[in-house]
Length: 136
Image (cartoon, rainbow, N blue to C red):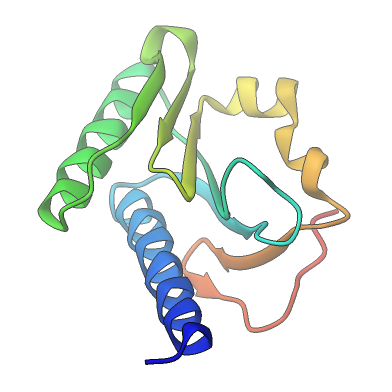
């Protein structure tokens, strides 16, 4: 297999992993689920998943379901930061960073504005996007 084919295959697998995380959050009633492809502009991760939970127990449940589903597929988080009490949890899967927010914290920090010029939305609340979608 050529290097280019390997890179495409790896990229497809990373997108599938990111979509699995998005679909898991959506299946457990996360709100405003948006998956961003930032391969061309971020050094930290290729994909960023941002979604909201409705309460501290809901944030805890989302984080738990996400971790359980990803482990079933052989993926363990490198690091988890935050807690339901902080109202913002970040789960690091290497090429995927998952941000679970309480709605007020998501509005306050507005991290999605960081990517508004460079992000490609590849998944939004159950919809797969074929073309880049403007964030704002």
